Image (cartoon, rainbow, N blue to C red; front, side, top):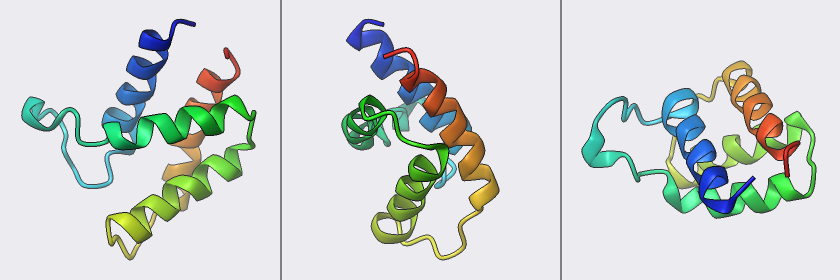
Length: 89
């Protein structure tokens, strides 16, 4: 998978499946989660478990976004999709 495609796929999941601050279809904010893409790709290259990916996302929500209530089931779904991408690396 080319790097551009990888970034695009991760961005899509972050915006459409994760989206903890509710950006939705606001095209003016479509780069809001781009700062996390590089870290997520590095993690995916290490072939982590779904649980590890979900924990990483949970930590972002809690520490960087200040979200107190995190839906861990939803995070596992997102983490599973990200892991699928990681499996192609």
